Amino acid sequence: MFARVAIIILLGFVAYGSMLHAPFRIMDDRASIIENAAIKSVKNVPGIFQQGYFHDQSYYRPLINLSFMGEYHAFGFYSFFYNLDNLILHILNALLVFLLVSRLTNNDAIGFWTGVLFVIHPVQWEAVCNIPGRSILLEAFFVLSSFVLFLEFIKHRRGYYLVGVLVTFTLGLLCKESAGVLPLVLMVYLSVDKTRSWPQKLESLWPFLAVIVGYLVLRGYFGITVLSQAGQSRDVILGFVTFLRSVITDLRLLVFPVGLHYDRCLPLFASLRQPLALAIVIFWAAAVAIFVLSYRKIHPFISFLILWFFIELLPVSQLVAGIAVGVGRISTAEHFLYLACIPVLIGMVMAFRWCYEQNVRNGFVISFLLKFLAGAFLASLLFIAVEQSIYASSEFTMVARSLAFEAKNPRLLEDMGLLNVLRKDIPGAEIYFKAATKAEPTNAAYHIRYGTALCQQGRWIEGLAQFVVFDPGKDKDMVERQESLTMEHIRQQIAEGKTFDARGWLAMGIYYERANMQEEAINAFLKCISINPGQTDAWFNLGSLYEVREDRPAARAAYKQLLTLPGLTAFQRDFATEHLTALGER
Image (tube, rainbow, N blue to C red; front, side):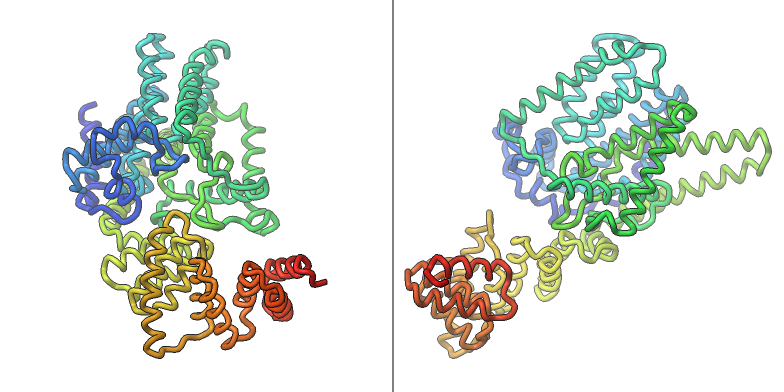
């Protein structure tokens, strides 16, 4: 037993030790640690339990902030120890997998090899190598502990095991919301047990329901109640079918982990009539039908493993909440598989064991060949895990690798832009921020970053045009300061005799209008249409401004002119028609 534990620990350090010296990243590390005021003082401990993880109403993970607080006070901003804690948690989870699977199968060999696969499998890299993956690692630690303790409870019926189960399950929920699927997994596991009646089985599960109710009441009390829905029923269905497509990729990655990359996502299917969407529906409908029709012939434990896998993925199935990456894309991140991979890995070990035993009985090939293939498979997993760990130690390399797979992922484009800013490559940053705005045109944050990069290169008008495109929301104060600075430079250029095109005057007009400088806004829009009489946005804004100033003839003239122009939007057409009627123009 000691030798097996030592092997799992050693393999964990070999697989992921390369990432220990990785610095903090500009992504979630910044919000979770560097700029997280909550972890800077122990006086904030009560407040941590009263607010969302990102100071919002969506995520409630107070134990993660507590772990970062402990590291901050012990090590400051020395990233090595944050990375080390992640790796230690991953190795502890592998040891728990060893223990859990040994209990589930009554076979220490199956438990050991599943633990080995778990600790070295490269699909774990995203959870282990990114410090905010702590939520996944810590949740897994408590969930696996709960599962082990529950098995001890139903075997020995000792009350202290049940107390331990409830404590660890509660702690798991305080790390990550997806821990809440554990009771479903346990219910399916109990269905395999034919020695107890269902009333006896359900009696073991009611305390979990009490914990979940208490957890929801706590979140409700603190106002952390927002659930990001995928949208209307059509969007939910399309999101779910897209998720089913990702599950096929997930299964492939667990067997053949090539093409791993950060922040994996998929574009939503636009319609179920798309050939690929239709093929996905048919494939999974056939798979479910085969499973249902063959249920009595399938070994109950195998059925449990299949259902366990899908239950673990339920929180990211788009049915519970919309897990999006910008507009029109859902997240299919590899860290979703951290716990979901366990039943698959058990199945892989059991399948190899069965094949090996059949070969021993029938002598199809020499046993050494099967052992060699198994060793080669394990070696390849270890090699890929080391490779991913090395990639993860350099954020620039990690993001660049991901962009090679997903060139239109807006979050990756933004990350690469920010990395170029840190490298003081502003023209390079501009390229990525521009691509991010193109990938997700309605995201104000991308326009703000793009506009700032333009201003840093002295392209003030182009920068201003990005600032005035959308409501900046929570970044309003910062944007207003940047707009004010930009306008100072633009006015200086005007005083020096510089001329601007129609788009430049349009941007200035929108800025003046938002600043409630109506006269300046009207003059800017007039200069815009003097250069380009077909500029619909300028005519639209002129009509609105004249109407606000109660200059009805001028407003009517602007709206009438707008309606004659090609290229006006449906909204502009309807707005102008409606307001002309209100202004007495029939």
